[in-house]
Image (cartoon, rainbow over all chains, first blue to last red; front, top):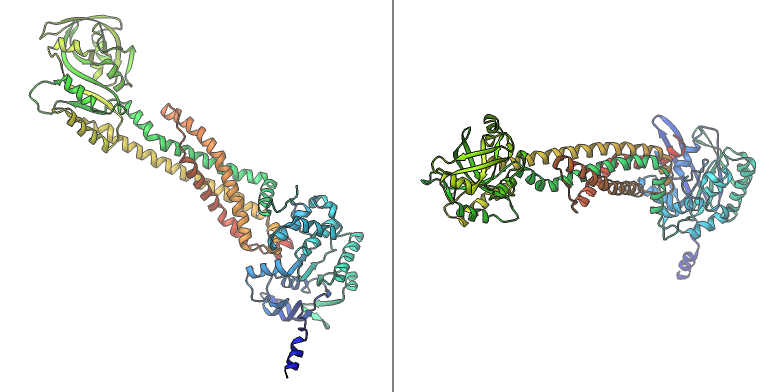
Length: 232
Length: 383
């Protein structure tokens, strides 16, 4: 009996998903942007969310990044229920669990690349120039640390944005059309960067129109009219 | 220069955010500097005004009279008793004093009222008198006289003329040169002023005077206390503040204080509106930046801290500039209104700083609330 109990206790905990959506909905007045969306994403997965314009991709990404709240259903992020959180709790979740990559990069123009990374550290815990410089080197921009965004190319700005998303070791990296503003060469570099991050075991969810990303991701979730298409 | 732990990110953000928007920050800074300048200038004047006003009002003549009690049987009082009364006034408070003895004497052209005075003391008591020619500089000058403008016109007396004066009751004679013609706009314009000892001889009242006029630096209730102490020091002497002037001191001061408070409040309200408009424009301009900071995990407190920090920094800088400008403005006002320099008081610094910061923070309330309400998802999409 005791041996059996010990054996049960010794079993590893089943790994909970990084993202678990159950019947998630989001309405804007009479308009239902998302309807009964359910899926989960395991740690280390690389998932692409695809769909035509107006399918609810952006709304879903906003909810996944805790920038918005669902009007129905549940969203568990790293095992934490987020649906009923107030703004302060959402902000805490964003800084502790999520790294965001934007299509428009959104770097602070009057800060250098290094300082843009340190800003994310500042809101998370404490700014550490050494760690920020290492993160820039990780994306191949160590030599551009003291340049301002206006002195960087689009591809370099996006790599700074990715380094910023990684700087606080988040449980989840969410990317919104990360190659939408880039030329082919930079698109290839960014896709390779995401592949490398995936190989490191990071959990990545990206919203994209780009079919090439669909082929790079482990799994593709398709949305149409606010609903999942097929099985997630 | 890259930031490090030694250069906290908060300070870096503050500095970069302010310097990158030098134009808008400059407008807010200028508004706060003007507000602080006006407040500090008025405050300097306010703190200095009582001294200045007392000095100014003293220039309008005597504010104390000491003499025999009303209803006394004998003419005038002993001059030594008046000297004791004058000596009872603290030296630092006494601006000037002169005994006065009135009487009638005969001139070549007719009878005239003569006033025996102490010329140096009278000059300090009545600095506003317009004198053609000059004042008589010593109290014992029995060769010169000063004469009122109207009396001089009536008797066709000019500067430098020689007058024969006769004390009708005593038969005493004197030959006097007119050294100054006095224009006061009051009864003095019809009198002739001679040295007190000469008047006493002409009138046959040696060692006597009717009363003494005093100019004393006192305000309000202090005047009554001083009157009591004079009467104690010189028994038989009645000391009376001249209420018309003493009470007007307080009324004028109250009105000026009120006016300055209204002007300062008006300027601070205008400053608040100007700073508010500038900060509101800055928040609108910075919406994507604020949205990004919130997306990165900045809570409301961090956003509020950033804006309050920037506002306080602008407020402190504006106050420092305003204090310098205000001190200069106070000097201009001091020269224009009182004809003198206005002293700098340490109390001006904390009061001006507090007024500026309250103004700046009041102006920041609405813009900061707007900043806190920015929805990151919307502004990051460019909405």
